Length: 334
Ligand SMILES: NC(=O)c1ccc[n+]([C@@H]2O[C@H](COP(=O)([O-])OP(=O)(O)OC[C@H]3O[C@@H](n4cnc5c(N)ncnc54)[C@H](OP(=O)(O)O)[C@@H]3O)[C@@H](O)[C@H]2O)c1
Image 1: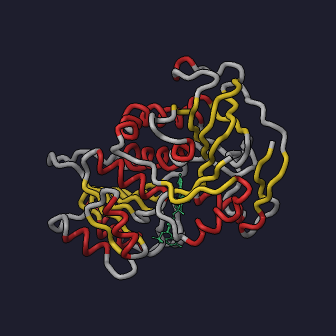
Image 2: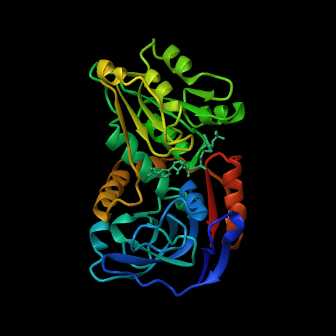
């Protein structure tokens, strides 16, 4: 089969079209003929040599695909998932998505929501699994003890992660605020459902979210920046607020006044999805199917695909991602 490999660590040009053997599904896995593969920032980190491949995972990049199930490994319990050979699916992978075929644990496959194309479906798994796991399971965005629905601040509102978090939280009734690097991107966040898009280059997110919440601050912050954002995020949190870190684009070190954690009962947490086991990801898939897939089928939540490229042009797709000119997702067509 044709695939894109990381020929050595480096710039986008190290992504090379190559010939590989078709993968064989292990017990519990399915073989997928890939039609489209989503691109995520962690693929860029892997290409640069900053994101080691977990043991047992494909060395090929690609954490999500859409395609057709064309084979099954021993004991892949497809019936319980209401899936069978020939079904179109989208799937969360541990790697190997930039290819004509890939394998995925059956539990990490979801049906393609009615009405969506393969390209749109391939843009869903990585960000939807990550947002559900961090915003709703880990940070427990829900109903405040006072009875009001809690509020969310999304840093990086136009990232693939951001466009997903804004839409799902808004559709579950939460007030959402989101930061981005330009006025146009701030308005794009508002078009997706954020009550206020904040241009972090010209505006102070602490001041703005406090002003819009009667001085309380937000209940949850979803952050991919960290670094010197952390002390400001603690200030932007309401009492009992939760800060959930999913990346450290602004740096891994922070200096903060920790007395606020004691006085105002704040929580700092975080996670990475890729190394978690299949059972953990399967539970997220079941929650997405129940709570979020109906929103995709009704059109209340939409995939946001900025641009798609043919598989052979993966390097150009990475260049676009690194330019940060995009709003939403970038996808490869296979
Ligand atoms: N923990 C997990 O399990 C997990 C899973 C998936 C993704 N992630 C992380 O989540 C983040 C978003 O992923 P994605 O695929 O959605 O990426 P993406 O679409 O490329 O978005 C990243 C956004 O971050 C902003 N940005 C880029 N470089 C920055 C920097 N140095 N400082 C501050 N902001 C910067 C840019 O927006 P502006 O132009 O508006 O600044 C850009 O749009 C990535 O860092 C990724 O590694 C974590």
